[in-house]
Length: 146
Image (tube, rainbow, N blue to C red):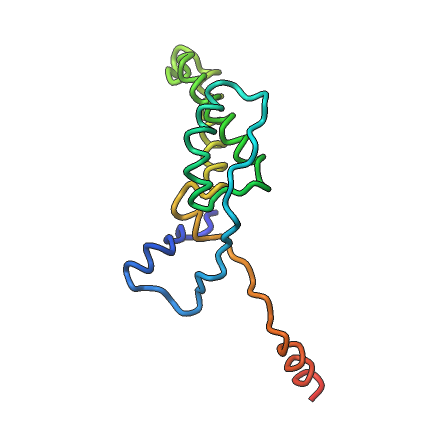
């Protein structure tokens, strides 16, 4: 069973002028951007992806230094998909096992892309609660006891 329609990216909603007041874009997570240190044992194709995509998504704020593992898995999976394609995994008749591995790797890659925020819809789904003001606790207390 599906989860409903995909969310429309905040930037698209702003351009359309169709922002609803109850959906506050200031609650979207905006961590301090930065490219984490690259692990030493990555394959060449993964290093290439790290050096190409990493700086771009770090600059946009979709990657920060405290979250290297998901991006590492993304780069490794890109390398795996590339390797499987070179081995001819797209030919279902010739290599059904390799084709299955390729399909699984591509599905996992898409999930990682959503986690990192490399899809427009993914960037608009993460929310954080605003911290309450210092006076809010008093209002809550007086309403409950009043």
